[in-house]
Image (cartoon, rainbow, N blue to C red; front, side, top):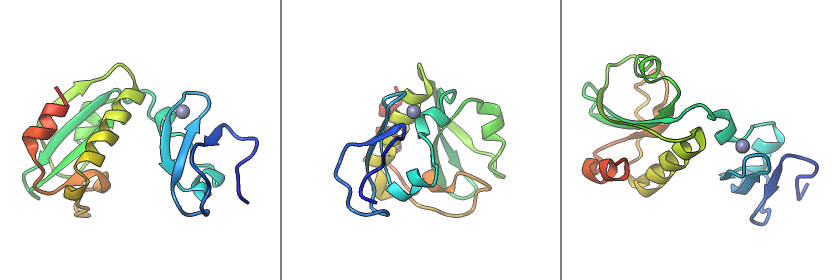
Length: 143
Ligand SMILES: [Zn+2]
């Protein structure tokens, strides 16, 4: 299969193969993101729509493990108590929409991707954790 027909998604960059990420756009909301075609075919939906109520972006530190985490949520208190380790909150910012929060989260994770580090130590959310990141630069992006 070289293209995806009759779906809510358009691929914006040329198809390479089923497992190489290409830029897709969700027709309904306009969000664009890199995803493997096989994940779309498998029914993986638009992340912006999945997080449409997740307007809060948080930047936290787990002192116990010496790692930092960026994430988005619709309920800060529930999210912060879900990691199995109590974090220190460095910054919480409320955006206008879940899409805006997701865009900012992805921008920060992309900008600081060399610091990404999966410790496997948290109960959830291990893929958006950072080791020794430039904290002030990240806080600047969350102003
Ligand atoms: Zn969407």
